[in-house]
Image 1 (tube, rainbow, N blue to C red):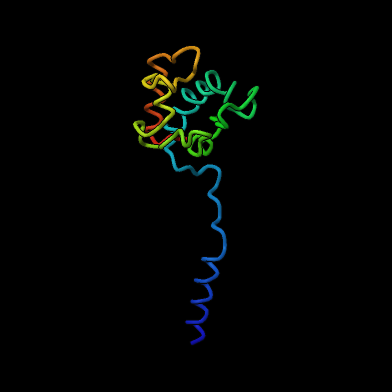
Image 2: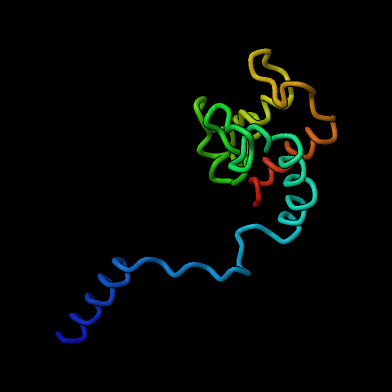
Length: 129
């Protein structure tokens, strides 16, 4: 009886306690995916998007930020901009491809084909950050 009570108590406590966060070195993404993000995607976001869509920018337009993965998934006034793994459902990809005349980012100049391909590949990879 006592061992059963102890077992139940352990189960209850383990459910009530928050999960221990993973070590900083642990990541859900392979190192090559993180490297792709750091070398190709982060610099592109900083150069092309941060001025209008980052906490460090002049003004956050559309209540939308691109300075964290969570912010991209949450989105802004128009909803989520990122569906990890699915470029077709990601407004970010819709905006950078200029296929929608009402949603074209960056607004002054379309990204290069290589940059669009990199961002599309990044979304397909699950948007590692």
